[in-house]
Length: 483
Image (cartoon, rainbow, N blue to C red):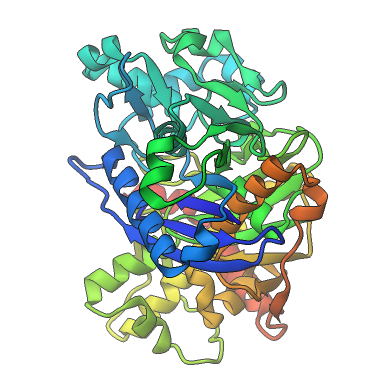
């Protein structure tokens, strides 16, 4: 048996699978995000370890026989977070998360240095880890002076599980310290933020074994001695492992807190100016590219809070039949935007509201705006050479058949829904553990899951949604100017 842990922004999911990758059980535990200032987003790493204790206990209690047969653990985690430790491994401050935009000035300064783009293949976004460190050095110098190790969120979990400082290529590619083509830390990039290689964890491929589970944890939950922990990866790379998006022509769309459109790539072919991320995959000798929308289901959740209606109730008001695009435009930039704008200051809003606009039309506009933002990412990906005609959909938003049909129509792509459900990154993490512990070949394990349903574009509305998208895209600069 194997466990996949998916450390998300709002909670931890654990998936127990057998050696064939079949799900046996799952458990979840939630935690909060703190926003002490505008644009700030932080989390206490102790919340992650407490959540891990909770899900382990729940899996053990629900599946006592199979839980005792666990041989390996893999970990997926939200990317770009800055978890700072002192020489004793003690956390110095709350982790600064991926959607924290406080370091936009520091990011711009690093991005102005040509070597960052040349070595990483990416823009230095405010959400990345390196500019966060420069912000800490400037505003919290006493913390920076004590920093002996910088870990990404899932790597802190791995440290807690094994006592070993480790990182994988896919997650590290989002720090702005990794030479993404060479798959190694860059001493020059580290030096630009006042760090050295000694403050970085050892690098592994995602399916490599980091070490054994600490005996104190194994004993507490009735796990056998010698359970091996693999390096795992960043959430999107590991989700790609879970749905088989590993090479050219494969990809997925994720409708989670953020929105992601990801394409597997057989080589390293960056185009930083497009604001597309080009990262190492979680398996050797593969890369992936993705466009990122910072507020996907977060946009619908925002409307839910404003209206007092649940997201499910809001989408239910739209009915089962896809509506024609509304003339009301929603720009979904609640936390700024990455692809293709790289603008931490731009903000969201409606255009075209009038006295006849009702709640259902506002919901339609929100779903439409997020879909258009993902179309922006699709166009940016195509500039890099990425291409596909079918993608899989994962994430909470994919439960809305209405939204998925709208997105298929906006992207003009067929969208497949996996049969097994929304296991995504948790399943991918378990698959990485299977490969690392058993030596199974990646191509035999990282397969596409059975498809429950294929959503095709609504042919009668492809043109009308394309025209409305063109307006959304063309009017972006005007929208930005009036803010």
